Length: 318
Image (tube, rainbow, N blue to C red; front, side, top):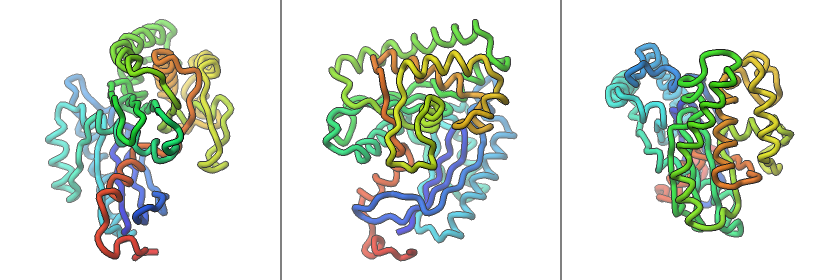
């Protein structure tokens, strides 16, 4: 069965196509994305502006057409933080469906954290014991922990790299006082959730997922993506602190020249690094393993677990 997974995130619209079968590894056979920065197109009232809505419609329609050309049997289409938190979310979803025929499911922050956790659990297996996962998106931060397939605790906070950049930084590079103020704000937002995590005991295997964590790890010396998904990559707290001191003094254009950051995300990597550093500090984490699987893989695995129709796992499109 060929599955198309359309992820309308806060930074990008991302479509992957996977030939799925029971017990199989969800490896994309086609991967398409388009930068959108929806979380940066919210007006003072929290509405996604018309320009952003029109761009979203165009991107979703292009993805729909691509999924059809790839002969996807099913399209799993969902939206995360930017659409979830928008004041005009319902109107936007209706307009997208009317113009494109694609019905986007808005997944909750907790569901996002749980699905990502399940993908991480599958990647590392039962031998990993308790896993604590951190995921930084454009609009939100997801935290989860557990010893089973489903996490004991899953939390979502509006601490995404794009959202915080949009709301806090108005100069390039950001002013030192703004960085310090943002750091204090993030610490305050994490204080309550961190208490709940500490109450569950030892962290276990600490993991980071998302493009932000992959970029931060690369900037601190981890292997490039070209080395493949099975190379161990880590991010350490000392390395992250040194990185923040370095990149926070650079312009977005200069950061884009660094290996591991693309131009579309260079403007928000400072905020992302601040969130990563604060989350690791709040949970007393000295090091994170970087997992290549995250939300999209979790969605695919959940669909496979629900069962495929007879013949769907026989490689119809191989």
